[in-house]
Image (cartoon, rainbow, N blue to C red; front, side):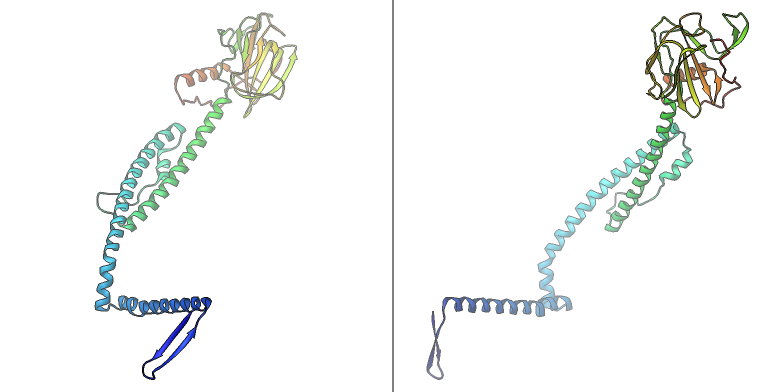
Length: 328
């Protein structure tokens, strides 16, 4: 490319020869210089005038940014209103959750005063007026704090109810022979073999041979053997010193070391050992002391009639240390 430069004063002309690459380089340099000059002018005049409050420049900036600020403020206000309504709904739900927690806590055996202390109160109340951004942030912080407190409360309630459920599952309240009426009760009676007064250390459930025998509660089989007095015998340990014994069976299905669930079939009714007829001899021992199994079975009937009710088994009454000289 050839450029001719003419000087009118000197009446001279000069020719410049530029190749394609040189022309592109000159164009880029020129564009860069123009951009730098524009940025410098914008920074020195427009921005400085806006910061210093120059009359003409300040008014121009306000005119340009007014509509943008109004739109931003309107958008922020609409979102704050939506957030305020949702926070009001969340506070109402938290209040309902607190009331529910207090009702459930009474079932879990917690003190209502303790529950109120754990749940906490206070915080910014969402009303009908327009909230500021600081109020919205304070309300969100308060709701987060209350949510953590409700979570801690429900965790405690879950733990208490789980403990109660586990205890109820390990207390022998399940009738071991369903289709059978109670025969001989716990206590002193006339021995059917010797005719003398003797202590009967359990309950007798007359039933045909092979009638299913169910575990009165969950636990671990600790004894599974044949005994001269008890015949085919099985014992289940339910923890906390509580053991149930099932005697005179015809067949034992569970083995020593097996984990047993409440109501699981563990044996069948029989007439083995020192027995005068087909029946199950059922015993309950607490720390090695014989207890009246009827108290435990009565507690189970109470649990079935009242949901979440738990019959508290108090300290064992006076009993008799175990021995194999009693009549079964």
